[in-house]
Image 1 (tube, rainbow, N blue to C red):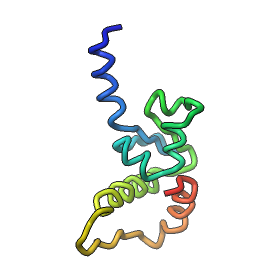
Image 2 (cartoon, rainbow, N blue to C red; image 1 turned 180 degrees about the horizontal axis):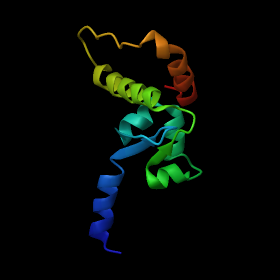
Image 3 (cartoon, helix red, strand yellow; image 1 turned 60 degrees about the vertical axis):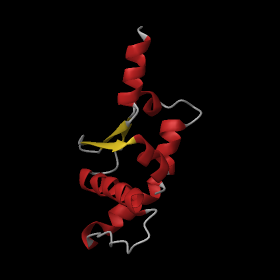
Length: 111
């Protein structure tokens, strides 16, 4: 195996993580955001047990629907974008219809 290709693959593949919802929809999230924003994803992607997710950079969530996983991704990006802000932080809008389902997902993901 060529070392140049290996380094190139590591740089491309490990920059983003593919998150797959219950319906099979795919969402891409920067690996650093996933690891810093969710204890569950950190364990899957960096755990000592070498989970399949850490090798493939793919995390499947068979119990989280697409619209909820999309909102989780939005929140994790929002959290990183505003974490060191000195100005007024805009409200992260959560529709009342999805609040309970989102709470369950956030609890599972520890984010």
